[in-house]
Image 1 (cartoon, rainbow, N blue to C red):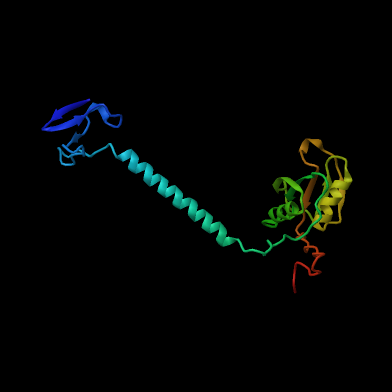
Image 2 (image 1 turned 180 degrees about the vertical axis):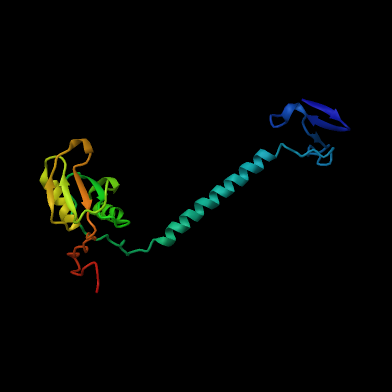
Length: 194
């Protein structure tokens, strides 16, 4: 629908016109940018769409270039040290009973790297325990022995308590430190050099 407005036609039935106000057109059908300071809103959706498409294309291009820049043909990814993971899921509760800051976190990281599922980590009710102990909580001593072997601990006891939601509890004494990593069978070199 067109009406006359100050000598120029005004379109009032276009969807991008708010409230049917329209914008003035000159005789050639182009928008009148000087007509009372109105901005031509009819081209905004097309321009915004084109800019959005340009930005999205540029972002996708940068992503592809970045991925190709990181890939080197023929180069293998570095391998993590090999550790023997348990054949079945063993859940572990790790407690710092020795009072050494960060000990439970280091043990948790070590056990997770070895394939164990650490479900709880934190401080024990009290500090002052002399040595590290691994406790079987479900009546399957072999699970506790597997955890003890991964931690380099020799003391394993059985005290079943299914209410703890863990197969094994580890109570770390102040003497515990992560054991050295096993040797890589392919290259014969140890993980630590010295």
